[in-house]
Image (cartoon, rainbow, N blue to C red; front, side):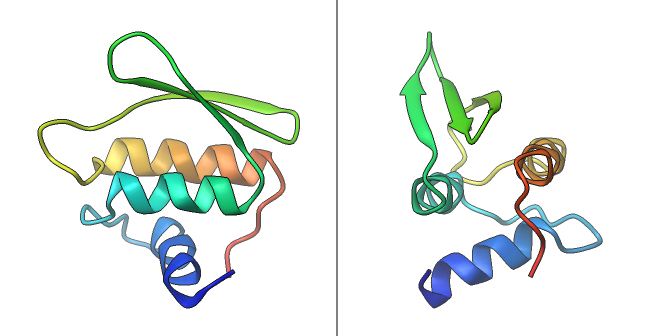
Length: 85
């Protein structure tokens, strides 16, 4: 995992929750972790990582995710066995 993805993973698990994490960086992290990503209707994105499935809404028009979405990503990663750095 390269340094940028390590920084993204660290940002996901930071407290207080950040509001400046780009969705594109999160998607790249999912790919690096071996997740299967498929498009749903509209802005929905379905993520399968290990045995965990989650559906997220790709943010628009902003490129960064909300704090609530970032908390959902954090919970999804923890359920899939990904530990904070």
